[in-house]
Structure formats: structure tokens, C-alpha cells
Length: 89
Image (cartoon, rainbow, N blue to C red; front, side, top):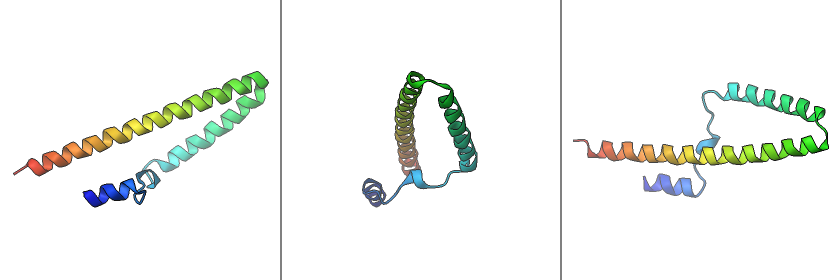
């Protein structure tokens, strides 16, 4: 456990870089989002594009907070499961 935490701390383990099961679906959605964003931006005036950019910045920050929270909750759950497993006779 100690080595795993050290490796995680030192950046030798990157859980976010592992391919996840729905990666292809997420990639397809990402392409669609980008296409729709470009189409929307083309329809907006300069003020509208500025507002869209601010919206995107806020959304990215919110997504980052959500991902961090999910990571922390997942780590805590794993620690609880490990603690319970070690308690079992």
C-alpha cells in the first residue's frame, strides 16, 4: 500500500490515463460537442463568442472540481473496503 501511494504521489501511476470502457462513446460525443460549438460560435457576434468562451471556462472548472471530488470519493471508498477486508476473520 505504501509503495502504491508513493507511486501515485510521484506521478508514476496515472489512473486517468488508463483507457476506460466507454472511451469510444466519449470520443464521439466530444467530436459532436466541438462541431456544435463551432457552429454556434459562427452564428454569434463578438460579444456572444466572448460569453460562450466564459461559459466554457466555467464549465471546464466545474468539471475539474467534479472529477477531483469523484476521485476523492472513490479513493475513500476503496480505503473503507480495504479496511473492512482486513478486519474480516
